[in-house]
Amino acid sequence: MPGATRPRAADAPGPRRTCIGCRRVAGPGEMVRISLAGERLAVGPGPGRGAWLCRDAPGCLERAAKRSAVGRALRADVAPGMVERLRVALGGAPSGGGGVQVCEDGGSGRFTGPPLNKEEGP
Image (cartoon, rainbow, N blue to C red; front, side, top):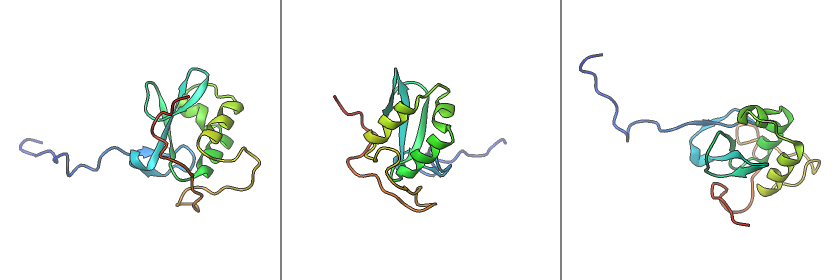
């Protein structure tokens, strides 16, 4: 449309991401990015295709794993052991450790520990 002005960056809503567990849409600051790094699932920024989970809801990973959404979102084969290691890295109990709840939209179960969007060393 001629003469129309584009909204300034400060007025724009910013990037939005969708949780692969609960399908909630939120900004990247409220989510944790996971990606495939070789034979493991990595947490935080990095190259390649990524998927997003709610930062404070271990139930979102449970739901995504149950629906096979992790492999589908990453467009790769993801072994159950890879999801289990990710669960432990995110501070959750190994599967079968009780009923965790999904994010605030479905009842909140909180991750514990430091922010997860930073790559941790060995």
